[in-house]
Length: 254
Image 1 (cartoon, helix red, strand yellow):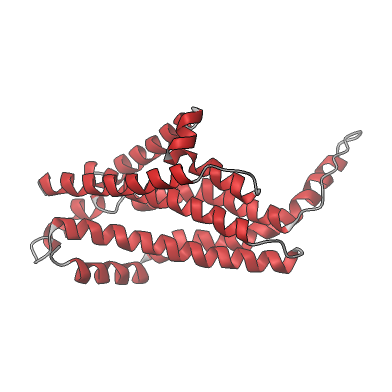
Image 2: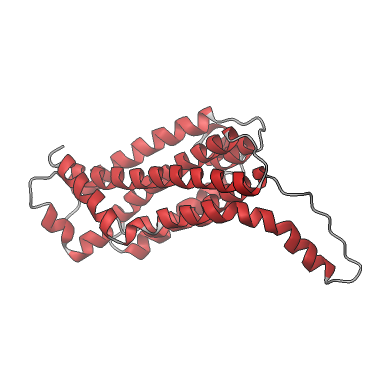
């Protein structure tokens, strides 16, 4: 693919010099720091609120490091997932509407290389940020709680990362199909909502990527979980959606 390496370098430099370096990495780092602390103070807050109501008594077990891990995974599954949709919605649509894509593609770079470089840069940003934030979460948890096994945390976040990478790839396709950032974001939200609905069906949870969320929670809780099929179908979906995005982009008029 002509021009891939050079354009990937340009994308990585652009991430480092613009707001993109602060959004997803910033949120991940913030939740890596605050999730264990929130888990630590939540029981005291709940008991304090319950104490203000006459006759109400709520007893909550003392929090552990696993509660901090669970809070971190919950924040990633909800808030960071939403941020990925919003931040990735303009991957192509913004550059196309501003005329930047047309200018870049007059140079010796193929459309496939243009899209693939954007996808690889986004996935690298997400993966590195997730690894750093997970390490920070582990470190803070070890500071405020007695140490607990880190293996379930790494496994659960790895499963979440697979689903997040699939979402980034879907957003790349949405940004190719829709000319506006808002339209791409709406399509991404629709995809997430549809996946949530499909996850009601047990066979889909067991044999497709929609089961990744539930599998991550089970793995974190050291419960038996089906991960081979969800991870395999997620990888196949990433490759397939990426291929479709390239084929659609190659046929579009800019």
